[in-house]
Amino acid sequence: MSEVELAAFLTGAIRLALPVLLAAIGELVSERAGVLNLGLEGIMLTGAFGGALGAYTTGSPVLGLACGVLAAVAFTALTSVLNITLAANQLVVGLAANALALGITTFAAGQLLPQGLTSELPGFGALEIPVLSDIPFIGEALFAQSVLLYVGVFMVVATLYVLKRTGWGLAIRAAGDDARAADQAGAPVLLVRWLATLWTGVMAGTGGVFLALADIHGFTQNMTAGRGFLAIGAVIAGAWLGWRVVVACLIFGAASALQFQADGLGLHVPVAILVAGPYVLALLAVAGLAGRTRAPADLLRPFVRGH
Image 1 (cartoon, rainbow, N blue to C red):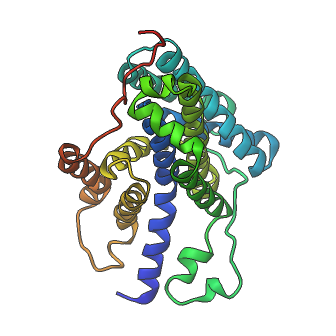
Image 2 (tube, one colour):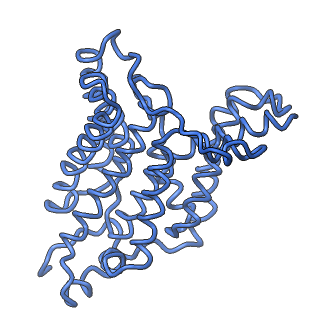
């Protein structure tokens, strides 16, 4: 096992962790506000398709990013009408949203993108930071990644800061822990929940765009491949605490990177086990921690003023 192979593994782990991390931190905000976005997979997939179509149409990855985020936010708004305004069952809405997103993106990609579902798209290239990118072992992994990765890291840090250190973050946590008391204290609970879920759309949409425009520079059917569910698992495994959610996502990223780097690391494991690895870890984490953590008290509870 050489230093080059370890560096390649670390680079891949960070790159594969980022889309899950973006979606997970967005979902953390939503769940802390009391709303479970089980349709997170569909939001990511919508963002990936919107980003791919935007980049293909305009020739600009930046405009593609904007299109992907807007598409994801619009899709999130649709589910939020049902989850928040109409107080529908959040589990049923989420499952239906995932199926809807898969069907729409598959059909639309076949109609609007060349070669059916795939195309070579303009995307975000790597940004090599001088001097730092030359540091042995960690230089390439930390300082020679896609531009969009650094944007995503900034979004994650900023979101966790707002959630933990600001009055707006306090309002979000209050809406999820005791919506009735928050309402009586003057907090606009429904508005807080709406904005929290829309921010989930921004974060998950960015994660989807990262897959399409910073990872493979293309779009394929169901390209999110369960990452939205991994993100939800990371929130539960992280006990709804920001730093623990980050750690869980990094572990999932490392497990995913093993699919491509196992031989170089001297691990001779059947491919099927490596592919299933991240999802098995998520299942074990959720099963092992769910009984020892406390979710936001009003998670999954619709808020209707006066009832």
